[in-house]
Image 1 (spheres, helix red, strand yellow):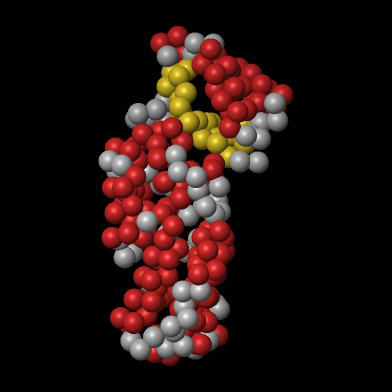
Image 2 (cartoon, helix red, strand yellow):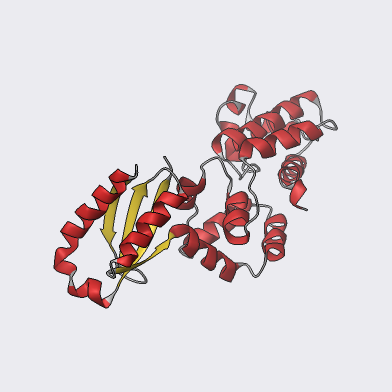
Length: 237
């Protein structure tokens, strides 16, 4: 089942009735079980929100019903992680075009992900809720700008169908195919990091200098990888 993160503000009524929190949590747990959901964990927090609830549920509608029921008792106001992230991302990127320009211009895509995390917007919890098979690009486009997402497999298959590696030699194509598989299967987006060439399956293909030499130079390798990355997101252009 998908995992959901719910952010909670206590109302004045909820603060006054704080001593009843254990019973309210038990009531929430039972209400969730009745509709197939499971309360995984509950955290009291400091800062913008008073508490965080992590739960497993069959679908968005189930979580929405539980949140509405909790809010209806007057003790809390709730917000999903998805809604919070959408508002925060729209503050960070003025429009879909703004985000697309930033993404295309960034040779190191992971830098955007790390930048968001440093600003309190880690994408991993969102991936747990929406789909681990989506890469950060699709998570952001889908959540912030309501774009239908593609899975990593769908993006990789689109690149394979276009056969964009034909201009490279056989060994270079093997390396690019393996990088594409790393993206598809493991979500690796920093494909031009030479450290990737030190791990399987690349380590069995040759040393890092030998693999890079298939592209003529390090600059040639990086250029090929950037072409691969551009092809992954080509349909959004």
